[in-house]
Image (cartoon, rainbow, N blue to C red; front, side, top):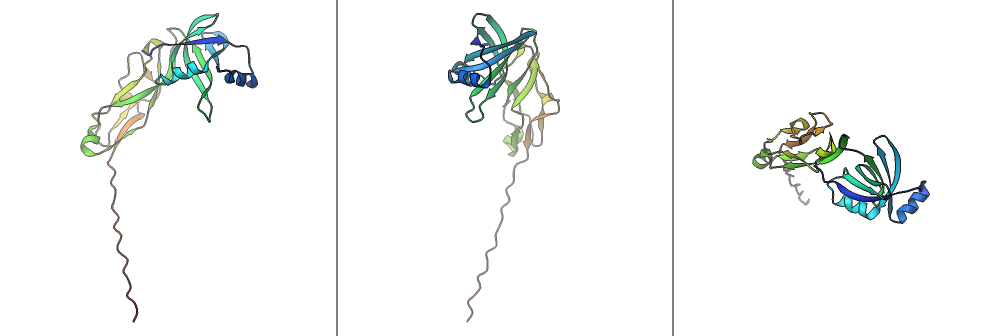
Length: 204
């Protein structure tokens, strides 16, 4: 199961792009929490604390215990993060309020394990085509990372989503035939031989 992180939050009343930009200059990250049939709740969290939380997580899909000042704690799923196109800094966060029975959709990193037979014995090229897998599960079953063993792959073989052994309670959202890894044939570099240019003799 994914570790539940803790993050302090405060309710905010300021809205509008100008006021939100001022909030960001003050070190806050404007946020919103929705879900469980409750009205949307406008929040703000410490931008630096949020950045540190992302830096120590394997993906942006995180289970969070939001400690909302004056309103108690709320279990939430980090649904989406907007980033500045130039700096990459977070500019807004969406939190989905959940409970233990709320099924969530997450993108979890997919790590390839082992050394392919086709690579080791035949010089094939391992191509990793899916680096993050979209899954559905209950919060208690959310994994930090998914793993796929490529040891048995020969040259020309592919590993599909349907071949993966996913943790209990976790299912992939994409079709089973989607390729996540493939061992291609060794690349042959043809040597081009350039014939020397004949040197014409000088006329007498």
